[in-house]
Image (tube, rainbow, N blue to C red; front, side):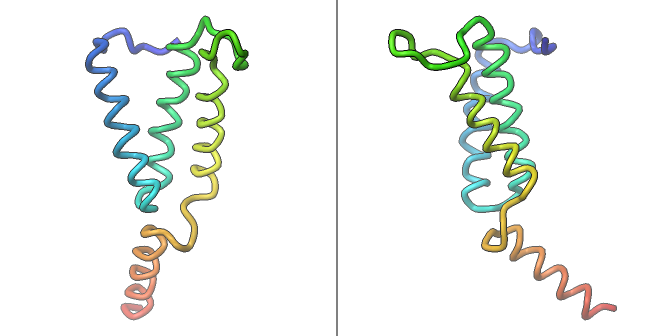
Length: 106
């Protein structure tokens, strides 16, 4: 499905951990939210459809290994990609400063 066979297990694990730590911090701060959500969404797509390809969709009591959590996180990341960070984020503050400088320059 994905051409990720060239990546070793250790490199893939390191990239996933770095993406989840760094991008989660960026989303919390509201800085580069859409890009960070895209990276985390891609991580969840790989987790759901590559890593857990043979697992069941829903979590059931005997086995707690399923695609459902990854797809729920993917849904949250899609929402963040569509709506962005909001007005109380660093993106909005930085954008407001840029817009005010552009109005002065014009």
